[in-house]
Amino acid sequence: MAELMERWNRTVDEAREGRTPTYADPAPYGEELLRRWTEPRRKYHTVTHLTAVLDHVDTLAPHADSPALVRLAAWFHDAVYRPDRSENEERSARLAERALSELGLTAPAVQEVARLVRLTTNHDARPGDLNGAVLCDADLAVLAGTSEEYARYARAVREEYRFVPDDAFRTGRAAVLRHLLELPELFRTPYATRTWEPAARRNMTAELSRLTT
Image (cartoon, rainbow, N blue to C red; front, top):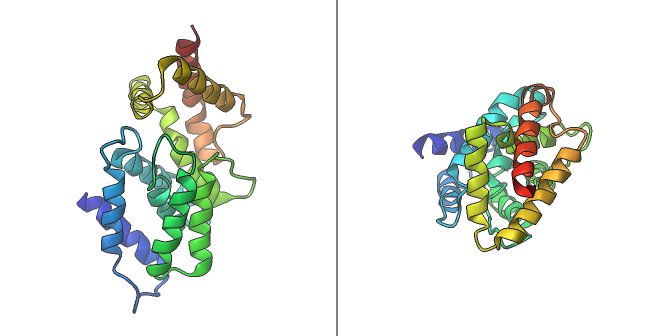
């Protein structure tokens, strides 16, 4: 947790662009975010996922216009998470708007972070949206893990949706996988397309087969 807090404080300082004199201490905001990411009901959307997304953003940072803002969006993108609700991204974006304004970011920077958080609703980064491509690719990188890593991810997702009956979950999950597999490209950055796309498609195809046979 201490390392994550250091990353949070460093990112806020970078995103402030030197505007520090009278603004709030970022530490309590980071602590509140970590409290949210460690809620007991979370099984996949945990600190482990947050750390992985931040690490992937670091890998993809050369492709972003504003890496610090993408990192802040990663911190907030699942800050509000209830698997039985559909407004998680919107509520997370509003949380980011309030917190980052109090922390002294410029209005355009706050708006960009909130936009990126909302983008994770459908991961549909448009051509030329470099920040969006990096965040979406970092969030979806879990799809490209080893077969064991992917299996752990799939089990964790099922645990978060344990309130959904098996038949309904299998139908819904299969629909999500089909949608992703039908996309011309899962990833938008050159690195992710080259490095993660083949493994992600193999993993999802295998899971879809298990769900439908």
